[in-house]
Length: 115
Image 1 (cartoon, rainbow, N blue to C red):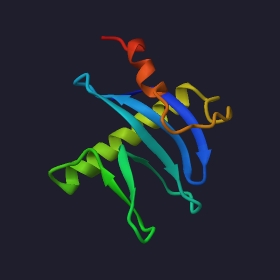
Image 2: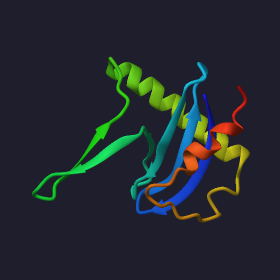
Image 3: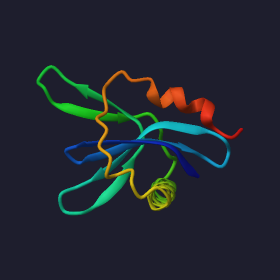
């Protein structure tokens, strides 16, 4: 698994968004790198943000797992891939790039992949 596109967002606990290519060749677009104030960090798979009529916001995942064990294993592998990318590209977190909604930038980089 490897990160193939990375964009720093730096908005609250959201540090960045990235695309990841799995060993099978499948690509997951718009994963998020989140770092909480207490120092905990994790990668979130793409999800849809939905607000109900009372203003309560919920998030619904686009990708699921058949067991908690598989989810945790995948999450660890995803974080390892991100950490490897950050180690190999030490300046990416110092360059601030603001994200914007509706961007096709993630999809525009699909032609840069090694097929």
